[in-house]
Length: 362
Image (cartoon, rainbow, N blue to C red; front, top):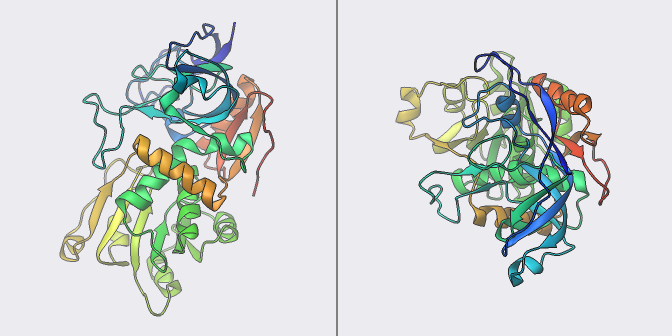
């Protein structure tokens, strides 16, 4: 019987509990007409997986494999021609369902259902095998190894929507600030913006991550813990464009109060997460300068396809911070520790099988 890793229920209140990992047995998949069976070769963590273990994520449940990011080989299919065409191909998986192509948000009245450890979409990539509908697959970019391919889906999609769809400022010569560099979404946003010819600046809590970001194409960066960092950043901007066009933010906190001083009139703050605080102030100076704050989640099936095609065309590679091998609970717990301590620079990946392996570190 195939195996997977899920969370085990123990007593505790949301935000105070930390559910342990457990290995579970899952059914041998039998695809319907339009489905395929994917033998997973790698899966990657996201911050939502840490929230699930802390019972801070909507729909958290037990007995469902964790993780939404994955890559693998299609080993069997249903009878439809759409399913059969994927046989023996290396694929990456669209991490959610219920959102086809609307710009505003999911068409499904129940909303967007992300895989991994939740009730609404009871599938997960931290497993030996899984079933997917053939319509939710993209061929894995050939230039990526398995750990890189597994690192791409959720963070790539989130970064794509935040930068391209919501900020509408991914244009050559535009100044883009990406906060909290080191996380997977921030690094993918950096990669996309640099590939578009933007001048990209970053913030971080330590200089080492800023220096690594510069190696990846960032024009500069500042330590957000230092007083007056916004003035330091402004001094770095090009002389002919002494303002930011957009901010791509995953922290929340004081991004509006600090960022509105740097943005052009009508500038955009595209927020995909609020890891510092679930609340923030919208101040009157931002109103007077027509600053817009736009919430941004993951993205549609169309945006997922567009993102993967961009990665293929530009030969971009997600940054992988660290990998472990197999469904080893202690080793996987170590990846969660990296995330809790914010020590990673890039994605945290579990290599599950023999495929196009390899590790990518900066």
